[in-house]
Image: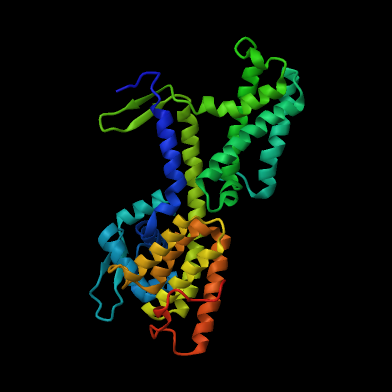
Length: 115
Length: 278
């Protein structure tokens, strides 16, 4: 529905928006920082996977990213289960899991300007 | 979009282009050269204030890059257009006729009021708002610039935090070690004079969550250190963050050299006295 010319909503909206923006960085809290950490480490992993043609095993990812194995598995769980950016084949009994970049991950990389 | 390369390009755009435009405009308007420059620079100043209000942690770094400078220049050009309009429309703005400097101030600041205005707001069925008016143009430009700056800074910030978190993780080997490091960072906040109590409490709450949250307590130390790092960086800025982490690394190394305290849990038993003042 179109609003009339005298509508002052945009002024209220602008004030509200600027208030939200001013406080955004300090009110995000831990959940946002957790998301940013996952995204930051996730991006490093996605870039290396994409460079390698979409598939790498876990040990190769450790070498390529500089992320230790424990952290890598922790982040891969989030990337696979929550974000569906990668698929992790956990069949290797020694823990050298096969990690595959999924179209959703590739899509995210395009949106984030990584490729 | 590769806008400008280096400081030379930025200075040229910020100062060279206005000088050129002022020279070109002066001939047709017949007003003093500095008045035209004033209008353009005030317009650029408005753009600058808009960018710094969005990136409070590193306002100058966010502003003085190719994309930020491009936004200032767009604002400067709009101010110049407004100035020309004011000077040419003597019937519409009679109060500033014959007062080029007043007209410059009016145009420099007023241009944004015009180009930021919305004639009406169209609200769709699902509650989304679509502003219609000159604002749509500038808002679109700002959105692109904002995204580019944000992306550029995200890469830099992530690398900074990742590198620092790796260095911290090398010195902490248990949950107790992480708790001690987190306590140190919280106490370090007291050295920031301009931080509000609310911001200090938020950092303390973030550290507390990382120490106690059942989902995060088992997270790897580097992951927790990065999470705390992101929460800190927004408040301290890059330089402050690097300084605090340097103090933390010195402190952790010192404690490790002292013997079996690290990792024993004893270090975190007294969170109120984690470190010498950084």
